[in-house]
Image (cartoon, rainbow, N blue to C red; front, side, top):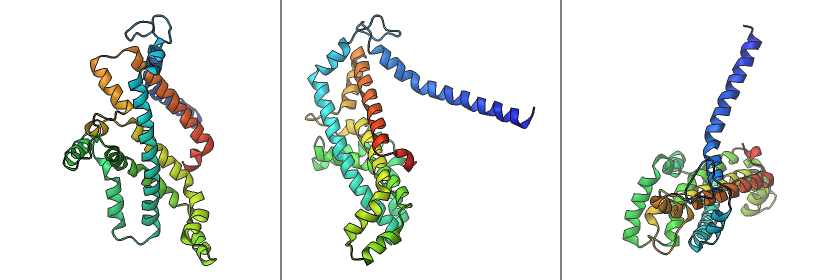
Length: 266
């Protein structure tokens, strides 16, 4: 077999393998979407009849709507704070002579090394002593713990492409530190900030292992609401709600790529 033929077969094999992986990832999504249109009161694949009544049931359920709005509010606030703190940390670690910078960077990344359940149990114990359990501030702080690693890491990667000499030149020409950063560095690291913000938003919005331990009776996030609902059985309304979330996430990613251009960051 010639080298060209071997290369052709290798490419076909890789394409087939990639296709299998894609099918494995997409098949559950297809199943959920199809199940959301079934006319029966239980999940069936293929669906027996087509109906939109499960979508109507979801959008008419006040508990689901309230949980959705609270999840969005929490994720938006967490994302904004995580971007600000992540930018400050990344800038300090990359531009300043911070003592023990590798140790600090490792500490910021450490939540990725622990299972979410471990973090949730630890925060449950701490929040029970401090009275933060069930509060919005408590949820915000908990979600910052699990989202900061993403914002810090992506912004640190972007900082590598920002020339510190340009910012220094702006300072020499009379710009104050904030203006120099805004004009010289921020445009370069903006894709990294937005990518980190995207990771932070998705991580916060979808989180269950940490959130379920520290939620109180006043608030309920949508993922936790879904998780508690399926404990008593899965009906097509859960599939309909999941389909809405899948569609919303897909639209959000397409718009984010169009506006920000994450391919440049990659």
